[in-house]
Image 1: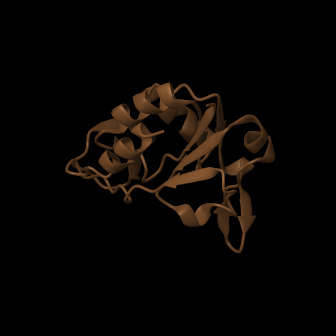
Image 2: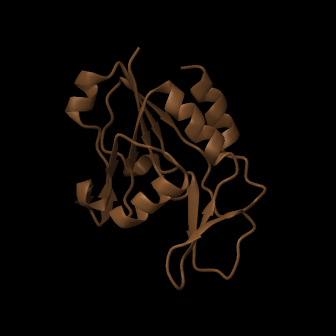
Length: 152
């Protein structure tokens, strides 16, 4: 079965913070003010995604930011979709499952802490919704997602 995983970044596998310090491991300093933290179990989730199917990073963030995160976490997506590929509707950015993906893949799995950013998703998609990550080293919100993903 050919699977596609649409992987969100912010609050799903990383957390960008302007605070002096968060307790989660620092992934990198993006600029003078913004630090990016890695969610516990992020690498385990990414490794599992790689064996389960193709990965597309789909984020409402900027492309340069998404590229840097992908490289630091060695995600190796087949594509990175950023804010420019999102729709701006009713004052917020929205993501959409493309028809070409529906035609190419048997199953599409969305891993995103914000299901409300997705336009109507087809019945062939599975939405895995982790709790929102806010930079805590004691966050294990990906544990349940990893368990569910292992069933596919």
